[in-house]
Image 1 (cartoon, rainbow, N blue to C red):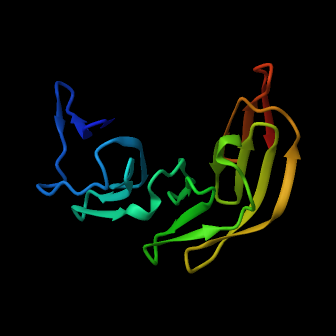
Image 2: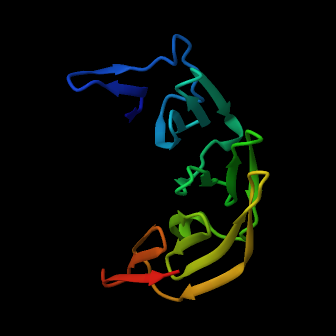
Length: 180
């Protein structure tokens, strides 16, 4: 679990501080978000950057250039996508072990309610609309985006997806769905 003192592990009876296999090297101590993408691979967003924790290799890799990232999501293949504090969308290429930027135009992170990514679509839930991008996954491990397809001009309180279904709560808290 993420705390303001780092990562703590709860074993069912008590919590204890995780020290990174004797060498605490997360990018910071204030944990903002934790997301597991592949078996044994955990991404930890801290106040000073993003850290990739590989439990099997017992390795922690820091990405301090992503200090203050805003939102992390994964698709069903376990690929990581995140929206940075500089209003840019990034994805992690597992084959190359590096980040690359996805061109989504100019969005203000304050307008983003949520992101949803599956194998074929990137869906950005904004306060006043839902934006769809079709995605293609290359053999080299990178995604490319098609042109923008705006679906709904609607007020969005919250949005999420499950496989090919997209759901959102409108301004009156009605649950709506769209099949992509």
